[in-house]
Image 1: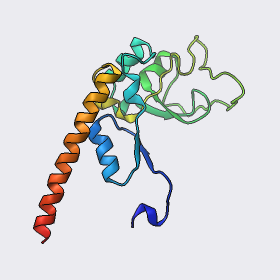
Image 2: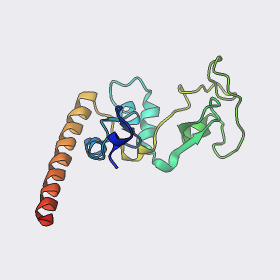
Image 3: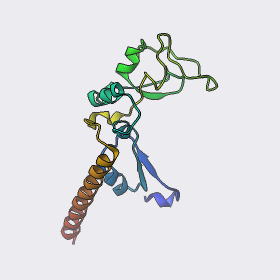
Image 4: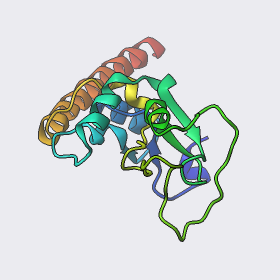
Length: 162
């Protein structure tokens, strides 16, 4: 079944994408757009502090915890940052949701998103902090390489099917 048989809007795919090849794959699966968040935290222009960027480089998917403990709303956080703030990522304790107040971690001066850091499961594919221009150039090249490879494979498939 094609997407347009049940949905005519713009389809955006996100999650664990860090390369131009990931964007090409998303489009080949039918997405109109691909969204990346964590990959752009680790650019030189990002205002994230150096420790946050290094933690992303040092982390893998297993270092991500989906928890409501920081703000009461479920979100992905880097386990080491939760532990540095004195939070046990494995406990079942939940914080009351109050969107009208500043999001704060429990005692110790840590605060959500300033010293308790969010990231996605794609952290394992991030090993540098290039400039945004360098990252985009790299991703454009990766995208075109992936698209060319897909076109070549599609041509082989078409020949073998006829």
